[in-house]
Image (cartoon, rainbow, N blue to C red; front, side, top):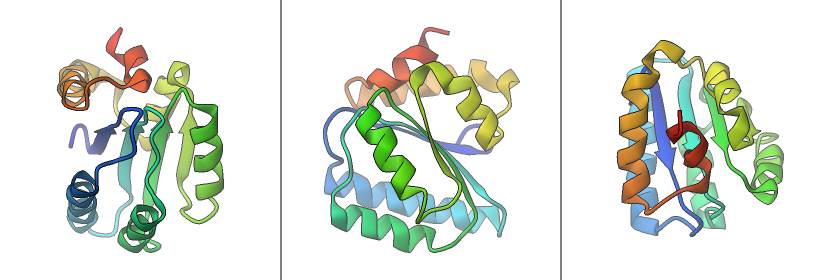
Length: 140
């Protein structure tokens, strides 16, 4: 959690089921901590998409709770999928990597905290062995 937002970085592979379970637990905890306020989520997606059972679990965790999600990806396919997904999970918007500032604005992340965010993103990026979507912000 950085600046009141939860960040996730993914690579080109579909999420590992065990990693997805951890992510769902973290997201559920974020909803609990938010106490009814919108959870702010920024995802740097590399192109891999969750399978149908993972998407179902996500819908169960979100379950009409307030959410503001920005998904940043260079994949037009993923942005299209996110656009359709947003019909079922309101508050979710896709962004191209060049629009990362607009994505942070959408979730309400304070730009004056970018100096804290970039090192955390570098660590996440290293854990998943590189995400094309995170490259743009890491160059800042």
